[in-house]
Length: 430
Ligand SMILES: [Zn+2]
Image 1 (cartoon, rainbow, N blue to C red):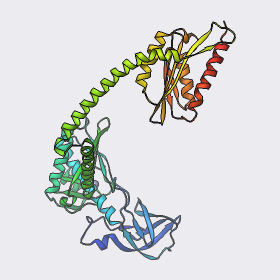
Image 2 (image 1 turned 45 degrees about the vertical axis):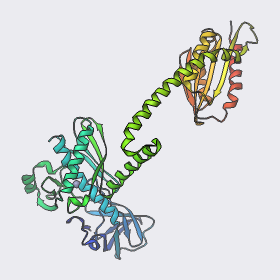
Image 3 (image 1 turned 90 degrees about the horizontal axis):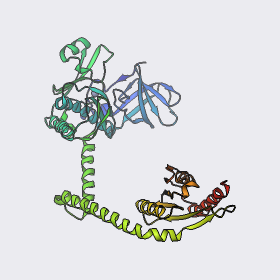
């Protein structure tokens, strides 16, 4: 019940499209009403880091294809209605296959380009090729610099423009190893005695079971999206090829155009205008900071005036001054300045501010003057308030902060806090 894989012996083939992308096959077995085994298939099953083909078996959509030993299992959506022994027409989604194929050949090219730019120690650690992008993890000691990344990209595109043939041939294992060395096993050692060798213009020669273009020129363009050091000695390179690469370049171009429009400048002056805007922003931030400092000093007196006195019912000498503010206008920097200066001016003061950020979340700031903190600790109070807002807080007895995102009952907070501060005052024994 071996499934003959009809893509294995060839590159994908534009001229014989009908043979590969549409074919008739006999249903050998149906498992669990949604896994179909055919006598032959043009569907590429997931393997070697290459994602599977999608398409149709009869009217049934194929959304996954896997290979177990010699059998290719086609997973269909819903219940498979046809019977074992039926002959069905099968269609492989061509655009998906072509995108994956280009990304696969691009992976071999990037592997070769990385080795020539970085050094002979570069080896494929793992690879993944999907419809929209591909990634290659290589062995390399450090993260790639921008210059190295661009050099690899340049080298890969040189190979594309050289229109190199991509040849696929089978060799006995010993012959393949003797002719091409163990470098053919970039994707791991192949278990069979018959080794499928993919040879890209004599530059990159690998044992590989995946689908490939005939000629590197078919890729059109390779664009590296990003590089990242993912673990000790392994660097990940993500990239796209073909129409996906052009789309990516155009998307990035759109982003630059958006910035150009927002800055009200033109393409030639975008960097200059951007730098100037950043400098202006820095200056404005400094001005605001100094303005806030002046305002906060002036605000201290008013804060102390606006604070209320909470007295213990059992001991008239035990009291706290409490200032409470929910602020949607000034930021936490302002309240840090006002709070600190206010408790220094009035050591009996408990300063509580809840700063609302973009109507979505709240920052909690609590200061306790040196007399007040004998009764109530700022960190405890900050955590208590933050919990009411669905978050948590901490800090020191003198200064606490926290935050939360549940803002619905914020108007009731003042009353609830007054109540709990009063309870605390009454509970104290002397
Ligand atoms: Zn491969």
